[in-house]
Length: 143
Ligand SMILES: Nc1ncnc2c1ncn2[C@@H]1O[C@H](COP(=O)(O)OP(=O)(O)O)[C@@H](O)[C@H]1O
Ligand SMILES: [Mg+2]
Image 1 (cartoon, rainbow, N blue to C red):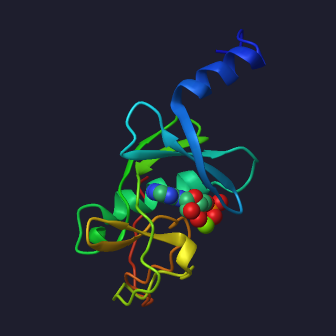
Image 2 (tube, rainbow, N blue to C red):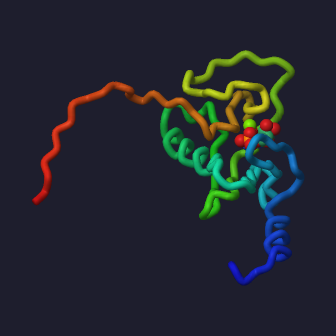
């Protein structure tokens, strides 16, 4: 891909990015043009790794009982600059719901609706406490 200039790369991005629907501390969010049931999150500055963290969190969550509290991730680009996630709809004016304690960034802009469920769509940073005990370990070196 290195042989392609900036214009070509921008043109290819336009194929994927529809209307811009949001931005946060690290990412711009667009309707995913090939399927508007999804968004594409573009992370343009180095060092945040939010797309990658979100993707990895989704992999940990997706088969468990907490999956229903999160907008599913669908695709990630090889270096993590672009992440495709289920699109959520706007929250009602006020809403009460229950959610896991490990959700850290609890504010309205990080949540949306999928059907009747309130889900988190910004979950790069979670405070997992799967098991925080210190346990004894025994190792033997292989000679
Ligand atoms: N899955 C989604 N569906 C609809 N809108 C979204 C989705 N994810 C993010 N957004 C919108 O884009 C904004 C920025 O996305 P967010 O993931 O919070 O980025 P950042 O990590 O930079 O804060 C959100 O506040 C929200 O308005
Ligand atoms: Mg956010």
